[in-house]
Length: 338
Image 1 (cartoon, helix red, strand yellow):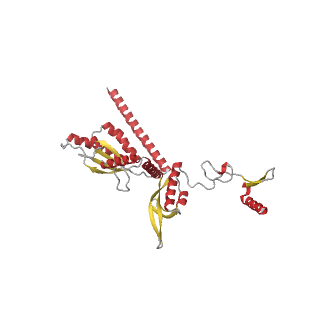
Image 2: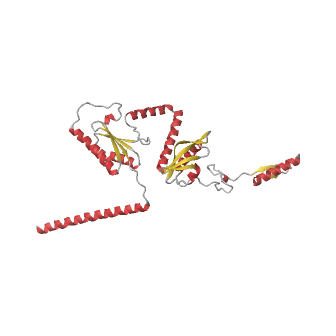
Image 3: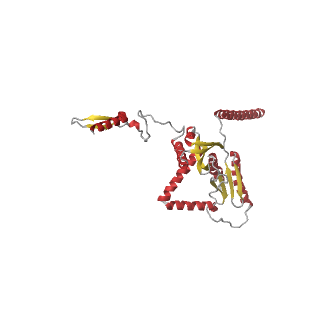
């Protein structure tokens, strides 16, 4: 019996290798002890490391901040929840890249410039009996991926509040319905994205129109956001029923409204944005503005553009200097003649 026990212990030591040893005490007892790995075996975030502190697997992503990696990890989790094998239908630059592995796709992804969004689910039939669900994932720009991740986090917060504070969610939904009925939330026809609403009163002061409102519109367009500019009386913006005194509008008021709307039209032409007009200038007018997506230019093109602008500034300065000198010569001749 004792021999069998010794053989079992020896076999166990052989399997465990350096992690096990037998310690003999003065009273004759033999104790089997185990040595633990050093702290470098586990890093502070709980990731398993090798005996010499090196991480066992290479990084999955290339570049990007921690937020970019979190956004990509969320897409991976969602994909694995839909398809256990992690297979996806990949879309890049509007082209179907076929069925790929989400992990292999991430290894080729540069998070400094790109990101992933989950678009939809595709049912693919296998034989006559079963079908497989493939997530459709699109490679998009970094900012679009970040926005999708922010929407995901916002939805998670909403789900938690729905459990802990349902009255806040009900109040928020009620406010959204009210805003939608007043034209505050307008949906785009292409894609269902929300317009950013900018309200302009017909009685706005010229300084405010050319200052604060101009900055508000251009800043949203620079972000690539679609904008809806609503012109109306200030008292009608947040009313369910419009106020209308029934009187005929004066020529001065029509001229004032034309001045306000033409000022905004001129701004949209300057930034190169396209827009659709809805409504009438005598009632409520709306411009649905689609921003121009700027083409990505190379460093060489940027350098050439910068040099071109520099030459233009120098040419303008030369023309102003010549004009000034010419005026000085003319004035000098007049003084000499007198």
